[in-house]
Amino acid sequence: MIPPVDLVVPVKPLHQAKTRLRGAADGGIGEPAAHARLALALAHDTVTAVRACPAVRHLLVVSTDPVVAAELAAVGVEVVPDGPVTGLNNAYRRGAAVLRGRDPGAVVGALQADLPALRRDELCAALAQAHTLFADGATERAFVADAEGTGTTLLLAAPGTPLDPRFGEGSAARHRASGAIELAGDWPGLRRDVDTSGDLGDAAALGLGPHTRGVLARSATP
Image 1 (cartoon, rainbow, N blue to C red):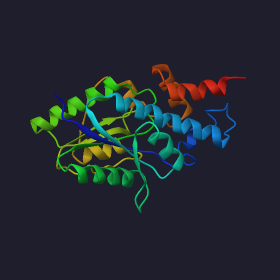
Image 2 (image 1 turned 90 degrees about the vertical axis):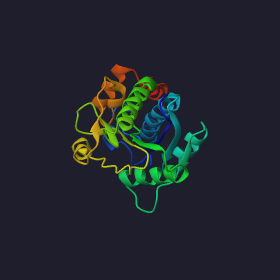
Image 3 (image 1 turned 60 degrees about the vertical axis):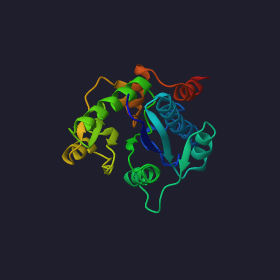
């Protein structure tokens, strides 16, 4: 049995999130409310998949956006605000510190919030593989690279090990150089983060979650 894992998912303020997707939700117009709906839907579908994985004990979303906080709290997700220093890696550090403060022996993980094709079985399989590596002493940190192999969608740290997130452009190489082992698996939904319209099309081919699918269907309605 896989020991429970605590995951952190940061969500940017919706008006700042996914800028390269602007217009994808309304036929290229780029209306702010339509864009915010899409950004929120991506997070909703990611969170839904995470909560369906029984290996995840606790999910903590880090966001200062009141709409994000209200929407996710309404479905039972805990949301904490960013700390005094903003930025993606600082959000991961803040979330990990909160979780480790509750259970210093927890396995903690950092997951991207833009995985609308994520399936629970993919996430569970990745967590199981990381647990095996941790239990064997093969590594204390592990990560999943994105579909292009250059970015990172998931980073995990064994009990007592700092998460040490290094997300951003070229993060796969930085995580590898920091000693984290890359997890290997056929997990297309876990690897398909969405930054561009092309990424969104690839995610749609895999099968979008209901929130993102609904937003796009709304945009397609005459």
